[in-house]
Length: 206
Image 1 (cartoon, helix red, strand yellow):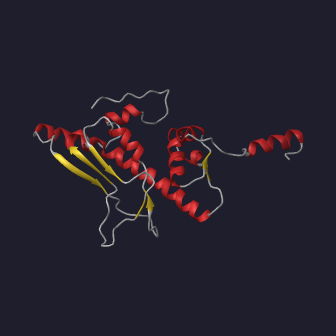
Image 2: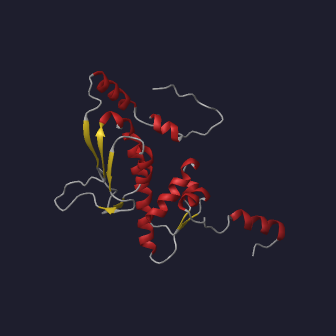
Image 3: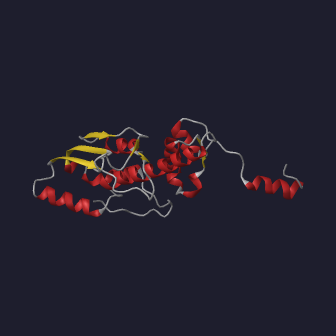
């Protein structure tokens, strides 16, 4: 694994190349890969399932999301990916109480094992955002729901938040780059500062 050099001019975030190199992965996957290579087992054919372990209290369903990111991560890897479609509503278990896999990867374990961490991160965070958006939209009914989540997340992830809030059911998003990824126009009214300035300088904000 290459040494990571800090650049004082940048924010704390991982680039696309960082993720591909495994810099966002847990270190024990690199140790596992090293051991498997030394023992000649890194080319073992496996079928790895990704199964949700639990839902928040009183949640009976969730929205599966994050597939787009996983496909981007694995697109040049010699593996076969099986998955629920993006935006699928799923339950934790089937009628018999068995947990249901939402994704599976088939291939040589050494070709993808260091990506388990980012894959779980993609699926967990995207599904969490999409599920919460879906619950809010369900409660709102016919009322319009706009995602303004960009101000509550690291800026590097604001397009990600907007994208998956939209997948979950939001009618529109405020984040400029998030809207760009979706191919839609960003939506919003105005910040409080605009009214404050007009009130302070012009004496009226109407």
